[in-house]
Length: 415
Image 1 (cartoon, helix red, strand yellow):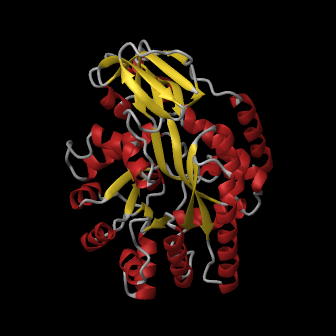
Image 2: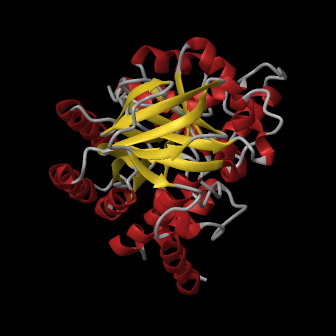
C-alpha cells in the first residue's frame, strides 16, 4: 500500500511525502506516485501526530458525569460504583468514542489504563490506531483479590498477541494506595521477566503522600525505590507532589513521567514542577487523563495548558516554550513507549496529520508549531494517518455517526 502526499508544507518547504506500507519511504520534490493513492497537500502542512501518554479511554462514557469533586470522593463515590456496572461491550463502545475523538484531534497513539482489555483492544484494532493497553491491577490489599488479578494479568498477556502489532501490552497497577506491596513487587518481577512497561499513577495528591508517610515513613517515590519497583520501564502519571530528592530518584531509575495539566487543575491535585523536572533530566511527556477528569482528549489543549501553567507557577514566560510542549506531545511520548515515530523522517513509522493552513486559527502563520500549541483546535486538522493508513480525511472519520449514536444511549442508562 502506498500513499503520496503532493506539494505539502514541511518545515516551511513545499515537498512530496511518499508512504509505503507503514513507513515514510521518501521525502522530496517531484516524487513518483505510481501505484499510490495521491493526496493533495497544497495549502496544508504535515506534522507528526500526537501520542497521548495517559488515558482511561472508555471514560468517555462518564464525560461530565461527576464533576467538581475531590479526587478521592470522585473515585470512591461516583467513578468506581459506575465502573462496576460496565461490561466488556460497554467498554468497547466507550473506547470507540475515545478513538474517534482522538483521531479527530490529531492523536494516533495512546497509553491506556482501564478494565476489560479486550473491549478496548477491539476498538483500537477497528479504528486503526496505535495503543499501549495496560492490564489494570487493583487488589486493595486483599490476598485473594491479588491472586485473581495475577491470574488475569497472565491470561491477558497470553491473549493479547491475537491483535496487530499496533497494540502493545503493559502492566497497570493503579496506584500505591490501591495495590499491595506484595502485588507491586509481583508486577515488577513479571514486567522484568517479560520486558513490559508499567503504567502507574504516582504522587498525584497530598493525601497519597501523607498516607504513604504515615504507613511506611517514606514518600511514595522513596518507598517504591526501596521495594525495587522503579526502573526505565515505569511510566508514572501525574507525579506532582515530589521533593528534589525524589526527582533525583526518578532520574536515577530512568522513570518516565507524564504531565496531565487539565486533570490536575480540574481535580485541584496540585501544580506540576515542570522546570525542576526538566532541569534534572526527567523524561517528560503529556497526557489528557480520562474524560471524566478533563473532560476531553485533546492534546492541543493539553500542550497549551502545560505551557501556560509552567509560565505561571514559575513566574517565567520562557518556561515550557511551544517547541518543548509539541515535543512532549509527540516524539517524547513515542520514545517513552519505544515507538519509532513522532517525527516526519524517512524510515519512521508513518503516523502524521495534515493541518489546513487556511484555517482562521493558523492565520497569518508566522510559526506553525507555536500556532499548534497556543491557538489551534481540532478544526485545523484535515487528515490523519496512522501506520500508513488514512484514518480521517477532510475532517471525516468513516462510521463516526454510528459511534456517536451508540454512545448517546449511555445517558439514559446512567442519568
